[in-house]
Image 1 (tube, one colour):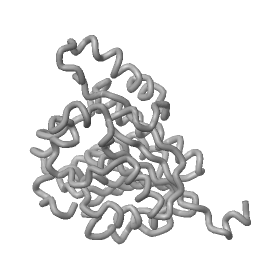
Image 2: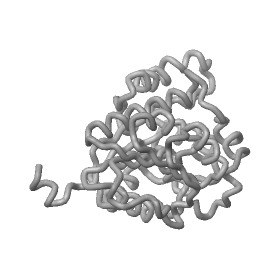
Image 3: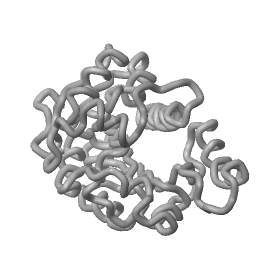
Image 4: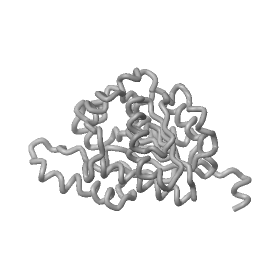
Length: 256
């Protein structure tokens, strides 16, 4: 993304800030991927769609789960990540792209049923402009599914500078949840649902043993991941997750 040199998103970046170079079964990353892929699958079925784009596709963990069923595309600013994605999700059409500099030409406007932006928008200096651009990729009735750090979470308030989202220097747009909803509406999209991913960044209470905190904080998140469907209240988690829809045009509504 603009303002962050591409080399900063190389292999060392992923190791230092996320510690994720693979998606081991039953790891925290595996459960997160399962959640997002499961919700994406349900959303595509809801709109009877086939074409999906993941912006900030990373190593392609989500795309790999969906490419057997759908026509999947990916874009990421990191050449290293896209190289890994092409290996893990060979059927997906993935490309290196700084979306703040413009969308890849092969992504035709008005043709996608779902655009997913997972842990991406907070890296952008002008997320409002990019969200408007991404909305143009959706067909009428298509869905925009994104997640961003929740600056009103317990972690943000209790951990201060140690909060996970403040540890990544490329996070340049840590905005209030309501601001993200306003930007969604400004992009011409209609809010469908807002939920969260729960409190997974234990410990939250320094003097309490970690194992005692897991049932209280992790259990709700684990349930949502097992079900692979949104169940947690909007502001009760480290990230705000939003599903929005591109309005149907008058000609589409008339034919329904």
